[in-house]
Length: 254
Image 1 (tube, rainbow, N blue to C red):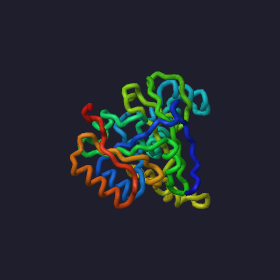
Image 2: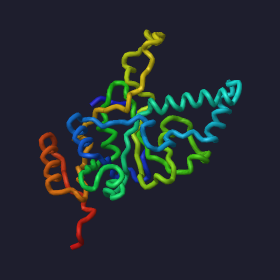
Image 3: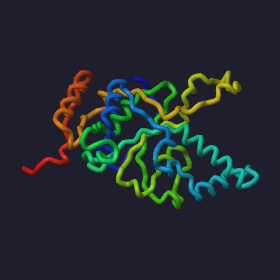
Protein backbone atom coordinates (compact mmCIF):
# COMPACT_ATOMS: atom_id res chain seq x y z
CA UNK A 1 0.00 0.00 0.00
CA UNK A 2 1.40 3.42 -0.90
CA UNK A 3 2.04 6.09 1.70
CA UNK A 4 -0.64 8.79 1.76
CA UNK A 5 0.26 12.27 3.04
CA UNK A 6 -2.12 12.81 5.94
CA UNK A 7 -2.66 14.30 9.38
CA UNK A 8 -4.45 12.69 12.27
CA UNK A 9 -5.77 14.04 15.58
CA UNK A 10 -6.95 11.44 18.09
CA UNK A 11 -9.76 11.85 20.62
CA UNK A 12 -8.98 11.45 24.33
CA UNK A 13 -9.63 7.72 24.01
CA UNK A 14 -7.41 6.78 21.07
CA UNK A 15 -8.71 3.21 20.99
CA UNK A 16 -12.42 4.00 20.89
CA UNK A 17 -14.22 2.00 18.16
CA UNK A 18 -15.59 3.91 15.17
CA UNK A 19 -18.73 3.10 13.20
CA UNK A 20 -20.09 3.88 9.75
CA UNK A 21 -23.82 3.28 9.32
CA UNK A 22 -25.05 2.41 5.82
CA UNK A 23 -28.16 1.44 3.94
CA UNK A 24 -27.99 -1.96 2.25
CA UNK A 25 -27.51 -0.39 -1.20
CA UNK A 26 -24.63 1.81 0.00
CA UNK A 27 -23.06 -1.15 1.78
CA UNK A 28 -23.21 -3.25 -1.40
CA UNK A 29 -21.58 -0.44 -3.34
CA UNK A 30 -18.81 -0.30 -0.72
CA UNK A 31 -17.95 -4.02 -0.77
CA UNK A 32 -18.29 -4.37 -4.54
CA UNK A 33 -16.06 -1.38 -5.35
CA UNK A 34 -13.73 -1.39 -2.33
CA UNK A 35 -14.38 2.31 -1.88
CA UNK A 36 -15.94 4.77 0.55
CA UNK A 37 -17.92 7.74 -0.70
CA UNK A 38 -16.72 11.18 0.41
CA UNK A 39 -19.48 13.78 0.08
CA UNK A 40 -19.02 17.43 -0.85
CA UNK A 41 -19.38 19.62 2.25
CA UNK A 42 -22.14 21.68 0.64
CA UNK A 43 -24.29 18.56 0.12
CA UNK A 44 -24.87 17.98 3.85
CA UNK A 45 -28.16 19.11 5.37
CA UNK A 46 -26.52 21.26 8.07
CA UNK A 47 -26.35 24.84 6.77
CA UNK A 48 -23.56 25.60 9.24
CA UNK A 49 -20.97 23.33 7.59
CA UNK A 50 -17.73 25.32 7.46
CA UNK A 51 -19.42 28.30 9.11
CA UNK A 52 -17.36 31.51 9.31
CA UNK A 53 -18.60 33.56 12.28
CA UNK A 54 -18.00 37.24 13.11
CA UNK A 55 -14.91 36.47 15.16
CA UNK A 56 -13.44 34.58 12.19
CA UNK A 57 -14.28 37.48 9.88
CA UNK A 58 -12.72 40.07 12.21
CA UNK A 59 -9.57 37.98 12.52
CA UNK A 60 -9.35 37.76 8.75
CA UNK A 61 -9.88 41.52 8.47
CA UNK A 62 -6.81 42.06 10.65
CA UNK A 63 -4.75 39.50 8.77
CA UNK A 64 -5.69 40.77 5.32
CA UNK A 65 -5.61 44.54 5.62
CA UNK A 66 -4.60 44.82 1.97
CA UNK A 67 -8.30 44.86 1.09
CA UNK A 68 -9.45 48.46 0.64
CA UNK A 69 -12.79 48.03 2.40
CA UNK A 70 -14.52 45.51 4.62
CA UNK A 71 -17.06 44.96 1.85
CA UNK A 72 -14.27 43.96 -0.52
CA UNK A 73 -12.96 41.56 2.11
CA UNK A 74 -16.45 40.21 2.74
CA UNK A 75 -16.98 39.62 -0.98
CA UNK A 76 -13.67 37.76 -1.31
CA UNK A 77 -14.34 35.79 1.86
CA UNK A 78 -17.77 34.67 0.69
CA UNK A 79 -16.32 33.57 -2.64
CA UNK A 80 -13.55 31.55 -0.98
CA UNK A 81 -16.01 30.11 1.53
CA UNK A 82 -18.35 28.84 -1.19
CA UNK A 83 -15.42 27.42 -3.15
CA UNK A 84 -14.12 25.59 -0.08
CA UNK A 85 -17.53 23.97 0.43
CA UNK A 86 -17.47 22.73 -3.17
CA UNK A 87 -13.96 21.29 -3.01
CA UNK A 88 -13.96 19.86 0.54
CA UNK A 89 -14.93 16.18 0.66
CA UNK A 90 -15.89 14.45 3.92
CA UNK A 91 -16.42 10.92 5.23
CA UNK A 92 -18.30 10.78 8.55
CA UNK A 93 -17.88 8.19 11.31
CA UNK A 94 -19.37 7.75 14.78
CA UNK A 95 -17.14 7.16 17.83
CA UNK A 96 -18.72 4.85 20.39
CA UNK A 97 -17.94 1.77 22.46
CA UNK A 98 -21.10 0.10 21.09
CA UNK A 99 -23.51 0.52 18.21
CA UNK A 100 -26.14 3.19 18.87
CA UNK A 101 -29.93 3.04 18.53
CA UNK A 102 -29.97 6.75 17.73
CA UNK A 103 -27.49 6.27 14.91
CA UNK A 104 -29.42 3.32 13.49
CA UNK A 105 -32.58 5.45 13.40
CA UNK A 106 -30.87 8.56 12.03
CA UNK A 107 -28.57 7.16 9.36
CA UNK A 108 -29.96 3.92 7.98
CA UNK A 109 -32.63 1.64 9.40
CA UNK A 110 -33.38 -0.52 12.41
CA UNK A 111 -34.59 -3.18 9.96
CA UNK A 112 -32.23 -3.17 6.97
CA UNK A 113 -29.18 -1.15 7.96
CA UNK A 114 -25.55 -2.21 8.29
CA UNK A 115 -22.74 -0.78 10.41
CA UNK A 116 -19.02 -1.23 9.86
CA UNK A 117 -17.02 -1.32 13.07
CA UNK A 118 -13.36 -0.30 12.92
CA UNK A 119 -10.67 1.75 14.69
CA UNK A 120 -9.09 5.08 13.89
CA UNK A 121 -5.73 3.50 13.12
CA UNK A 122 -7.29 0.89 10.84
CA UNK A 123 -9.21 3.62 9.03
CA UNK A 124 -6.00 5.61 8.51
CA UNK A 125 -4.08 2.59 7.26
CA UNK A 126 -6.86 1.35 4.96
CA UNK A 127 -7.23 4.57 2.95
CA UNK A 128 -5.71 4.09 -0.51
CA UNK A 129 -7.15 6.82 -2.70
CA UNK A 130 -5.44 8.34 -5.71
CA UNK A 131 -1.96 9.76 -6.13
CA UNK A 132 -2.93 13.32 -5.17
CA UNK A 133 -5.34 12.49 -2.33
CA UNK A 134 -4.49 14.00 1.05
CA UNK A 135 -6.46 12.84 4.10
CA UNK A 136 -7.01 14.59 7.43
CA UNK A 137 -8.61 12.66 10.31
CA UNK A 138 -10.00 14.61 13.23
CA UNK A 139 -12.82 14.40 15.83
CA UNK A 140 -15.58 16.98 15.55
CA UNK A 141 -15.81 19.61 18.30
CA UNK A 142 -19.31 20.63 19.41
CA UNK A 143 -19.68 24.22 20.58
CA UNK A 144 -21.47 27.51 20.03
CA UNK A 145 -19.89 28.06 16.63
CA UNK A 146 -21.82 31.29 16.00
CA UNK A 147 -20.04 33.02 18.89
CA UNK A 148 -16.84 31.11 19.64
CA UNK A 149 -13.54 32.97 19.49
CA UNK A 150 -11.44 29.84 19.92
CA UNK A 151 -10.41 28.57 16.51
CA UNK A 152 -7.65 27.94 14.04
CA UNK A 153 -8.50 29.33 10.65
CA UNK A 154 -7.98 26.44 8.25
CA UNK A 155 -10.22 24.16 6.23
CA UNK A 156 -9.84 21.12 8.49
CA UNK A 157 -10.76 23.16 11.56
CA UNK A 158 -13.77 24.81 9.88
CA UNK A 159 -15.23 21.46 8.88
CA UNK A 160 -14.71 19.82 12.27
CA UNK A 161 -16.69 22.40 14.25
CA UNK A 162 -20.41 21.74 14.70
CA UNK A 163 -23.25 23.13 16.78
CA UNK A 164 -24.07 21.65 20.19
CA UNK A 165 -27.33 20.22 18.82
CA UNK A 166 -25.31 17.59 16.92
CA UNK A 167 -23.28 16.40 19.91
CA UNK A 168 -25.10 13.05 20.01
CA UNK A 169 -23.28 12.08 16.79
CA UNK A 170 -19.84 12.04 18.53
CA UNK A 171 -18.40 12.30 15.04
CA UNK A 172 -14.98 11.60 13.56
CA UNK A 173 -14.32 13.02 10.11
CA UNK A 174 -11.93 12.19 7.31
CA UNK A 175 -11.47 15.34 5.23
CA UNK A 176 -10.04 15.84 1.76
CA UNK A 177 -9.54 19.54 1.04
CA UNK A 178 -9.13 21.18 -2.35
CA UNK A 179 -10.27 18.09 -4.26
CA UNK A 180 -11.33 18.51 -7.87
CA UNK A 181 -12.52 16.06 -10.50
CA UNK A 182 -9.98 17.17 -13.13
CA UNK A 183 -6.97 18.07 -10.97
CA UNK A 184 -4.86 15.30 -12.53
CA UNK A 185 -5.24 17.02 -15.92
CA UNK A 186 -3.75 20.31 -14.74
CA UNK A 187 -0.05 20.95 -14.26
CA UNK A 188 2.36 23.87 -14.26
CA UNK A 189 2.63 23.96 -18.06
CA UNK A 190 -1.10 24.32 -18.75
CA UNK A 191 -2.14 26.50 -15.78
CA UNK A 192 -2.89 29.44 -18.11
CA UNK A 193 -5.31 27.43 -20.23
CA UNK A 194 -8.70 28.84 -19.20
CA UNK A 195 -10.53 25.79 -20.53
CA UNK A 196 -8.78 23.71 -17.86
CA UNK A 197 -10.24 25.46 -14.80
CA UNK A 198 -10.57 23.26 -11.73
CA UNK A 199 -13.98 21.60 -11.52
CA UNK A 200 -15.51 20.27 -8.30
CA UNK A 201 -16.98 16.76 -8.15
CA UNK A 202 -20.72 16.77 -8.77
CA UNK A 203 -21.67 15.18 -5.45
CA UNK A 204 -18.45 13.74 -4.06
CA UNK A 205 -15.85 11.09 -4.74
CA UNK A 206 -15.49 7.35 -4.18
CA UNK A 207 -12.14 6.73 -2.51
CA UNK A 208 -10.41 3.35 -2.75
CA UNK A 209 -9.85 1.50 0.52
CA UNK A 210 -8.54 -1.82 1.81
CA UNK A 211 -11.89 -3.17 3.03
CA UNK A 212 -10.53 -6.24 4.81
CA UNK A 213 -7.89 -4.13 6.55
CA UNK A 214 -10.56 -1.65 7.63
CA UNK A 215 -13.22 -3.89 9.17
CA UNK A 216 -13.21 -5.32 12.70
CA UNK A 217 -16.74 -6.64 12.24
CA UNK A 218 -19.98 -6.02 10.41
CA UNK A 219 -23.06 -5.40 12.55
CA UNK A 220 -26.57 -5.79 11.15
CA UNK A 221 -29.45 -3.60 12.34
CA UNK A 222 -31.22 -4.67 15.55
CA UNK A 223 -34.66 -5.32 14.05
CA UNK A 224 -33.39 -7.12 10.93
CA UNK A 225 -35.31 -10.19 9.83
CA UNK A 226 -33.56 -13.54 9.65
CA UNK A 227 -33.67 -13.48 5.84
CA UNK A 228 -31.88 -10.11 5.77
CA UNK A 229 -29.14 -11.31 8.12
CA UNK A 230 -28.61 -14.40 5.95
CA UNK A 231 -28.58 -12.28 2.78
CA UNK A 232 -25.84 -10.01 4.15
CA UNK A 233 -23.82 -13.01 5.32
CA UNK A 234 -24.04 -14.65 1.87
CA UNK A 235 -23.08 -11.48 0.00
CA UNK A 236 -20.12 -10.68 2.27
CA UNK A 237 -18.84 -14.25 2.44
CA UNK A 238 -18.61 -14.38 -1.35
CA UNK A 239 -15.75 -11.88 -1.14
CA UNK A 240 -14.49 -11.48 2.43
CA UNK A 241 -13.92 -13.47 5.59
CA UNK A 242 -14.93 -10.98 8.31
CA UNK A 243 -17.03 -11.35 11.48
CA UNK A 244 -20.75 -10.62 11.03
CA UNK A 245 -23.39 -10.37 13.75
CA UNK A 246 -26.78 -8.85 14.43
CA UNK A 247 -26.99 -5.92 16.84
CA UNK A 248 -27.96 -6.95 20.37
CA UNK A 249 -29.73 -3.70 21.28
CA UNK A 250 -33.08 -5.48 21.65
CA UNK A 251 -31.85 -8.71 23.22
CA UNK A 252 -33.81 -9.95 26.22
CA UNK A 253 -32.22 -10.32 29.65
CA UNK A 254 -31.43 -13.89 30.67
